[in-house]
Structure formats: C-alpha cells, structure tokens
Length: 306
Image (cartoon, rainbow, N blue to C red; front, side, top):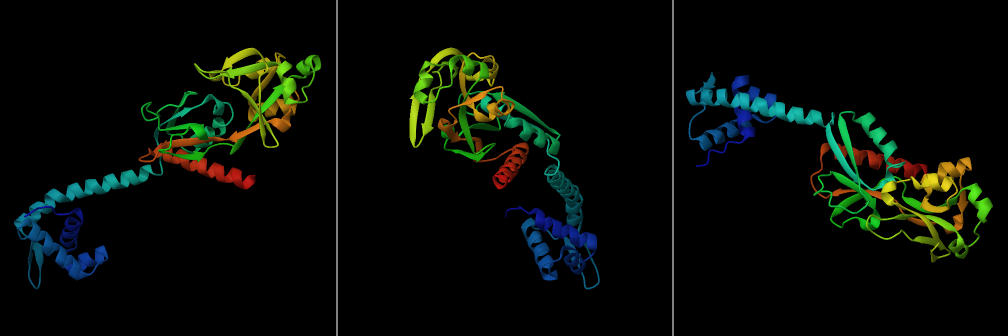
C-alpha cells in the first residue's frame, strides 16, 4: 500500500483536530461534513493506522494521529508561507533582465521603454548587450533579444517593440547641398559622396530606394565607411558636410526639424518592418514577463494614437 497522503487530505485532518469535530471542520473549509469524514477515513486507510478516536460525544487524536499532526503541521505552515511569498513576488518584481539588441534600437527606441520599465520595477537590473549579428540568445545567457523581423528564428515568440514601420531616409547638410547640388533622381545619387555602413565582417549596406512599386539599387561614391556598431555616429559626419547618409528616419527627425540636415529624395525612402522583441516559447523570467507586458501596453497605446 502506498502511503502517499496528499497535502489536501492532511489539511482536512488538521482542520478536524483544530476545530474539534467534523462539522466544525467542514464549516471552516466550506465543504460538506460527509466529505470531511470520507477524507479522514481515506487517509487512515492509506496510512494503515487509526488517526482519530470517535464517540458520540467526543473526538480526539490517537497517539499516531497526534504524532502525525505534530510532524505535518509545521511543514504545511512552511508550504503555505512559501506560496504566499511567491505570490507576493508577482507584485514586487526583482532580479536581472538581460537583453541582446542591435545598435539600431539603442539611441531612441529603447530609452523611453527602459525608463518606463525601471520606474515601474525599480528592483530590476537591466543589462544591455549590443550585437548586430543574429545570436543564440539562450547560449548567450540573455533573457530576450531584439531584431528585425526577417532575421528572427522560427521557434521564437516575438512582439513588436517601437515603431511598426521604419524608413531608411537619405539626408545631407545644407552646406553639402549648396556645394554639390540637390539630387533630383536616384540615378543622380551615383555622382554624390556617401557615408556608408558596413555589417561586422560583412558587406557595405546597399542603398535601396523604392517608388511606385519599383526598387532601385544605387551605388554612390563611398567617402566614408562606418561599422554598424558605431550606432548613430555617422550623423556627425553628415552634419559636417562629408556627404549623404542613408540611415533610420527616426535618427534624423530632430535634424530635419532643426533644418541642420536636408531630406534627400523622401519619395523614394525604403520602408521596412520595425524591430521585434523575441524570446523562447517556454519559461520566461518574472522581469521578462513584466517587460513583455510593458511592450504590449506601449504597442497598444501607439497603435491607438496612430
């Protein structure tokens, strides 16, 4: 016979002892008295010993029953305390959140999200690992990653983070345009100086323009090549008049508003899907679940505002 008394059965047994009878225990537990009696009888059968002595007037524990109660009561109290402590952590999130992200999201997409997250959950320490190549976030010890849609592995869950759509915009300084002229067609870009980005250990990123359903590949005169790990440092060179740059529109918006940079061929800017937060389709840490919740809230707000 297996002595596998369940915690629920033991709780019923303890309730009978504490309340002094089956009816009082049933009232305390909110169940029928017959269920309490059946449960105790089943527990006695499982253990092979009587736990309670019953008469028409009284009920008290046998020697074995009292010994069981004395051993089990502190264990069940500890179990209850552990459950309550775990429940409290759902409202007090702490620990570490490690994100693996590309440089493209560092200057402007991540900061407002992380500020809102840490205001809500100040006990969480956030680690940001910047890598522009696709990595195995599990092997890298990260909770989640951020990448652009086409490069996310199929076995990952992903949600939008930041803008749903981003544009690759072209820009130049007013001084450069005054000296070299304003290109009016994609073909004219081939005669202009360019500030280009290169993937780590890979090719220079192409300039693709799009208009009326047609995509055009342009090859300008490359004057400066920067690694994509340089984030948005190319803006300093374009402001200085070194050439035209192709980069994220959101990185250029403040310069366009201040007229420190001039939009080049805006009707031809290429659109691409915005970044996505991705994570394994299984157990997630409490800080990551909280961050996912914030991203969903922010995404819903942005969609409603748009």
